[in-house]
Amino acid sequence: MADYFLYYNLEEGRENKPCLYFEDQSYTYGQTARMANRAGMLLRELGARIEERILIALPDCPEFVWTWFGASRAGLVITMVNPLLPVADYVYYLDYTRARVAFIHESLVETFAAAARDARYLQHVLVTGNNFTHHEDKRFLSFGQALSAMPDELIPADTHRDDVAIWLFTSGSTGHPKAAVHLHHDLPFNTEVYAKRTLQLRETDLTLAVPKLFFGYATGTNLLFPFAVGGATALFSERSTVEKMFEMIERHRPTVLTNVPTMINTMLNTEGASKRDLSSLRLSLSAGEALPVELYERWMRTFGVEILDGIGSAEMFHIYITNRPGDVRPGSLGRIVEGYEARIVDAEGNEVPTGEMGTLRVRGDSAALCYWNRHEASKATFAADWCTTGDQFHRDGEGYFWYQGRTDDMLKVSGIYVAPVEIENCLLAHEAVLECAVVGFCGDDNLTKPKAFIVLRENFMPSEELTQA
Image 1 (cartoon, rainbow, N blue to C red):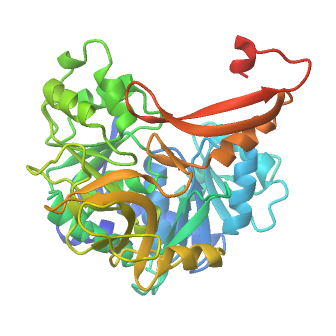
Image 2: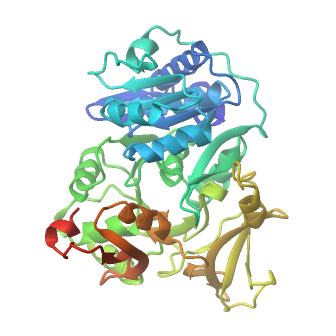
């Protein structure tokens, strides 16, 4: 997989072509490949073996890219998580993945150290950042120092297209994230049929994304897809604020922007939005939640760049239904990507007539093998080559798919599935909360947001201070 996305560029003569922009620096394909080799050698030096998991909890930065490709080429299984989680979540991920090596930024050291205190499997934590030198927990090492001692060459592991390559996390109704297990051929398959054939990405493209690389949506659109065509990506570690997005667009002049409806709405509502220069864009992608028609139309009036709304999932790696360049049906999620098949079925699993609503099932060669250690959930989702999405759709007579909501009680907020029970459990941990219930609601912008109904304990009164607690 690493050869398909990164190392083939060296054979194609792109060794000196910039592929990665970060802050005031740029990195060529040759530099990126050498640093990835060092990262892979470092993992082997630390005793990481083929098929073992590693945990990446890094912000978007060159070290994320080097670690990702180095681990892949060394035959390890990549797991990626949000670098802004609380201690309890890292405790869960360390136990669930059984990762022996983790990668974090120096800003996460104390949080991660608390999570790692009783981690049964963790042996090494590589810390990025210029200010980290050492920690009382001897498992914490400077990534930069360790990397500098490694050679530039790495003999690739003898992996097969059907070996496990990466886990992509998806939330479940229990509130505990579960991992969709993907093989080495899954990601290249989607890249061929979606990124290359459908989006028609090319070597001259430079990508930029609102979501971060740990999220499979951006892993594809802002790293793997541009690399697969010899293009480039621009990364930034900060949160994706509206001002940061406008700044990055005007500074790096990307041709493809990966967006989500929440940010689209925020960008449009920013004062002076129509005066911001987005003329470099030829494509804007949207996924994660349905894009309201009014947002699409406002975006077109303001910026004049087509938004290609689509749907994908961790279970399928990436987008399998999408609008296309020059073929956008506002309000719909477009048509099935060539190479995939889709059915809309009723509660008994029978296909419903055109125009009727039902549950979406999809199949294609990027489907996950299973959920790790979740046998019953795997049987419910993956059966006879079909992946049951839990999304309600109807398909019109022209083959366009229209999203109707979730089959279960999951909420899709800012492009990420959220289990109400997760929020409820967090609220119940507060001393003032006796009971609570979380539901979804649509605001004036027609975007889904969680809304909590709370019963306070005795001796507590509603207040602005408590609202912000």
